[in-house]
Image 1: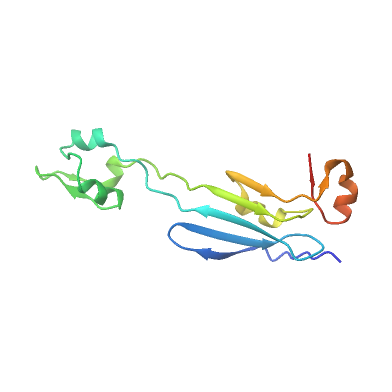
Image 2: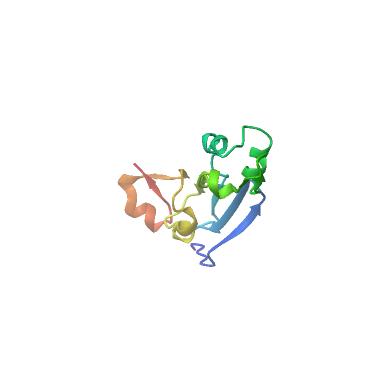
Amino acid sequence: TRISRREGYWPIYQDNEISVTSCHLNHKVECFGYVVKEADQPGHIDAAKCTALGLPPGRAYKDLKEGRAVTTKAGVEITPEEVIGPDISGRKLVILGDTCDPSCIAEVAQGADLLVHESTFHHKVHAFALKEGHSTAH
């Protein structure tokens, strides 16, 4: 009997650096899929713009990168929005065990930078593999 759980996906780990999401995959035995996502990072600081606003390189750049406004020696306030570029998206890794249907994790797997997918059979036996709950590879 194929185990097919449609409860969707759920988070299994998260900290300030990564998150891990899991789901049951459609297969004859218990099988899981995982999405490992790095946290987004603050964008790059525009040092030339900071200098033009009267803020030379230094410790204040760290404050800006951490989302805090700073004030120059001349009393000019500089906000992070003025000098920090857009956030840099974290990388996303999707790891799937053998399955004939990974749709339960598709929503959170979208935009993956790397997909690792176990496959039991060659694509030439696709119909048999699908009937048995397996994936195929080319």
